[in-house]
Amino acid sequence: MDKILLGHGSGGKLMHQLIREYFSPAFGIEGTGDSAIVSLPPGRLAFTTDSYVVTPLFFPGGNIGDLAVHGTVNDLAVVGAEALYLTAGYIIEEGFPLADLKKIVASMAVASKKAGVRIVAGDTKVVNKGKADGLFINTSGIGVLREGAEIAASRIKAGDKVVISGEIGNHGIAILAERNKLSFAPPVVTDSRPLNGLVRAMLNVARDIHFMRDPTRGGVATTLKEAALESGLCIRLKEDSLPVPPQVRGACSLLGLDPLYVANEGILIAVLEEARADVVVAEMKSHPFGRHTTIIGEVV
Image (cartoon, rainbow, N blue to C red):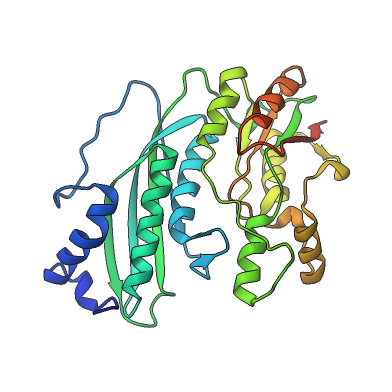
């Protein structure tokens, strides 16, 4: 047997075999109880959920599995929370290759370990062939807010600097290139990665960061537009400061896209006081995931 059958979602022998051979060893989940019982340190909690329906499931530099882990960890990180626990739900199409499922689950295990979080509960459902595009994943995450962290668009002030932690557009172009069988030199690779370590370093040197967000769907432009609308202020960007790599710029020109609207999965935008900007930028540049950090604009 090398493919998912409807029986894998029926609650019987095949489902238990799937859990025992694929999910439990990868995530270290023991037992089949209806809930995970976990301990949480004191403090305010942050809780988030996201669903992943990317096509193709495998792309340069990653796959839907590590993307799901990184995305949820990052959503917690940018509100100032330390991610602790994740859950994972899988909607699998009948006929999906078990070998691909094993690769995706293994990549989630590696990604969660690198991010310092645990996947503590999960669920699988199998749908008839043609009722899903291979595999959909939902991840939810819970974390504890760092003491003193108050990160919200409503705190943005005139004079604040806008900082970005890395190059723009790599993830979206990597997906489009793989989907449409396009080749670029050098190849465009997803930037999907966990940002909780970078955020931790930032908050160590400047706890009073006004706003953070990872510019995923809709890209940098949509993220900053939302921040401007919520704050009631205007955000002005310096076009020559935007870190768009040449291959992404070329791909966007070819495809008729604006790189500012292309999705990212491994960078963040921060808005903070001008007086703290240089200190925070220096700290970010010293982190492996922040080497391309730059100030791209200001609030007016």
